[in-house]
Image 1: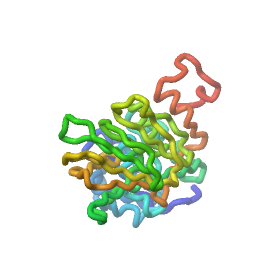
Image 2 (image 1 turned 90 degrees about the vertical axis):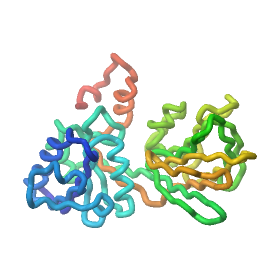
Image 3 (image 1 turned 135 degrees about the vertical axis):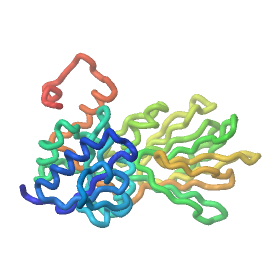
Length: 301
């Protein structure tokens, strides 16, 4: 095998015994071809090897040339945030239903992974969002998101009143249950459930999707991903809001706070098997064109 990577990290779905078999097969496969392998410490106990090397998930990027996430899209998102600053690629092995991000099944692991490790792959770059919570002109919290940033009403039956600015230009004010700011990656996640459009992954765009707006003419809007989105509140009485970055919660955001959201300059590099087809994934994940199959579909797993 021609070596394109030397040290490979593995991140598993935490606290899920069902990943043990796939992790063991993957580990044995990589060791067979004499790769150095490092497992995230929360998954290392699934591997029966006294010489196994393990480290914290946030440290894997320091030591690896490539990381493989084993689980579902949620595991992939966690792996993305852990390694994005190190500019190393990521591969997803899917243990659940067909995923938008994890596209290698355990049954195809040996064949497809072998070809990727020999350099036969499609590389794709996906950008993250960086969120800052500003209070009294100070950044009190900062977080990244692969899919979306969401501002929710929290511990209140009332709608929240949101003011949105794009590059410091007023867009609108709205009363709603919240607002989703989504990347193209996240456009097939929460944003889609809330009525937002699907964005092709390589588009340089973001989508803003209101959650249950009071005014029904308040619709999703697509903007350039170079823009900075500023969210503030116009309540006359104090309520708390909840900001989530993917599944990471930032609670107790005050109505006097500002939320700044901008594309992170560092993308994540995703490696797909050759022939990766985003439209095929859409058709299968969303059950489009049921009963109609193209010639290319026949060749898919």
